[in-house]
Image (cartoon, rainbow over all chains, first blue to last red; front, side, top):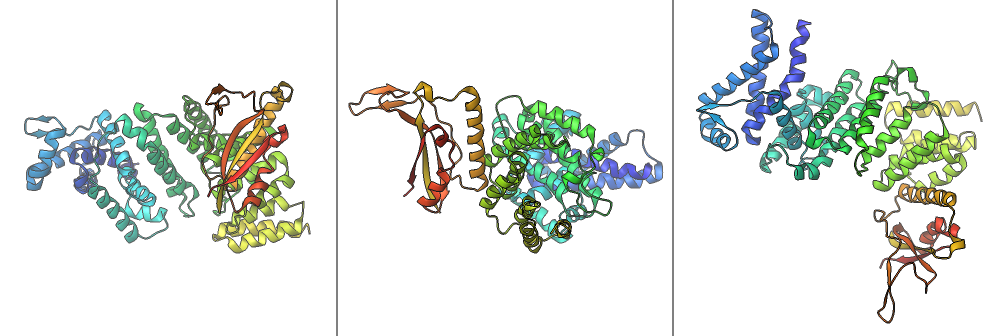
Length: 412
Length: 112
């Protein structure tokens, strides 16, 4: 319990204090904010080891962080000249004392400002995700490198470059107004969804870490939901989508890490609580007249939480896929739509549609054809699976395809 | 790859030629599946756009009439812009258009 206290506090409190301090200092001094908070945690682990854990560890951290910040202000010339003059414009000062406001409300506001700062399209998607993990989720370079299946140096450089870019562009850390929220919410939601997908679809063997990524993405979305200005239908739709997806987290990999496809999943492992929460947020998302792609994807994910293959289920899924593919083309959505079509209109019609897609560099395309030809023309089915096998890159994809080929061999 | 405009026309005014509510529902489903199919093939060159069904008509004597148009039996039900190699491919795509099930037609023009 005591051993886990500091890591747990780090996870929850690090980014809160960093957010508040970054908000106070501005984009050009985020490293100082990070240093102060790291120092605070270092002091905690040293002091608590000797003197024992204080009654209210969080309050202890806040007080120490405040004092360290004030000391910094006193000691440092640059702070006096540059930042204090900047801060004087933006925040009220009590005499000469800088007010460091670690109230719940200011933490939430600061976090919102940080989310909008981090999810800035001046950085690439992957830089935004790395930066989000670092600044918004308190992940260390090692963990981020693990999640991206990359090495520390690459991630370190990526994060620093992303910070530099924000400074060059002079991006302000400030609470977004309603126009800015309207203009930028799509980018923010996209980054959160990418963060979630990184965890959900990552081939990293580190399951705990992957779950953490998903949980962090959901936490950030929840932060947006708690804030009236960003509690928008599309935010709720994204939250619903993530709840539905994560409800299947336990069921989609076997004990030895192999991916279990939807139709073979043991639905007793689906998390009903997350499904219920997803349904709640889906309900919240259906006010107003916006229909974002998250609404459509959440709708599709909702129907997938019902295991039995009713015609109503697949008709609805096909309809949602029709809307989704019209809204935004992607090969994987095109393939999924065709699979749904086979469930509604039968394999023969779906084969004709599938062959029109002509996605000849995509192994999922040949796997879909293999699946559709199974029991219709098993030789053709096998041929398609074999082409898929030649195109597949990851071992888990290859394993699934090989299983399908073996199943067919007994039928031919 | 070229772009083609497909203009869907049918008779919207003759009473006996209009679909029943059930037929209409099914008809909508066909449109939706057709659009979904085109989008899945990445053949839509522009986002889909709904157009008002009534419209106006300016005649040669500069007179302005409200739709539906009595003088011309058929009016535009909608239009889309698609990607296709040539007229043959565009025409093959148009052959699956649900408007044909209601005696309508599709006019095709290539963007030049």
